[in-house]
Length: 320
Image (cartoon, rainbow, N blue to C red; front, side):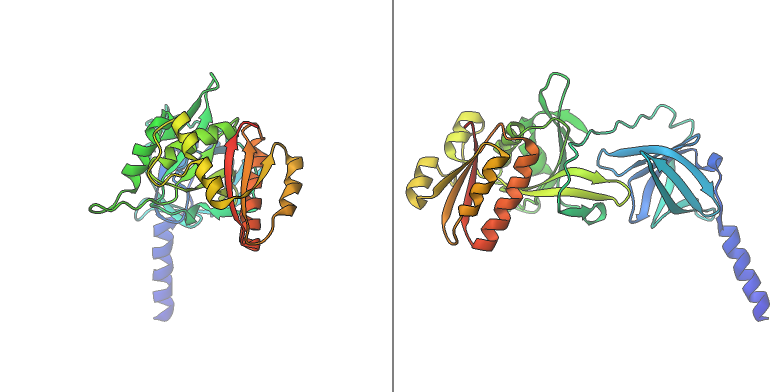
């Protein structure tokens, strides 16, 4: 009797879960449940995996029993893949997907890969760990070398950023809670471009932003930098929306805190940070022409020193 029950159970499993062919896979599969990427697209011998943040990766693939072997950009991935005929769901790694478009319906779909600036950081965060309440937007340069943002999949300008963040982050009654936004940096973005974005973050009193500069596709890890946004009234009056009542002028800040001023024109100036003393005030003036990679590393170094030495460090982005 036990053997009979075991055989029946095995037959049920076999009937519900089966190996899938390339013909079965043809088309677009959307994320349904579990932890995984937003979309899988199969066409002939190619697969496109889109993480849902505008960063699709395309490669070739092979099927082997309950596994899929993916080849992309010199890398090889071997992952679990199974098709459940009972509910028509595709199981890829730890997630389930359902077919949204057949091969014919998806023939005109084009995945445009966003060119990340590709600067690696010591800090990483898994894509499954991102705060679902946080806004994600992308910054890039167009062919005319103009700064553009992608908000909700639409190409626009920095002027639309405050409204985008308000709509995405406003909850309940008369109170507004703003979650730290995520900015994905595109190729060719400069420190000057970031300064233009900061101005519009200040409109809704956002003082922190997490900047994504690299994506480790095999491990689904974003490399990031935590940026604190410091702006003086003079900067705001000159470059955009009017300052808020709580914003301080550079003149008043200097008079109130009497900070030591450290200038940063190049990476060679980083050695000046060794002079920072505990429990003191500092204003670090950063040249707008500083390479973006040096700037990102500098922000992390300043945060580390400030925390370690309990120093009060404020920054400004200016032409030196």
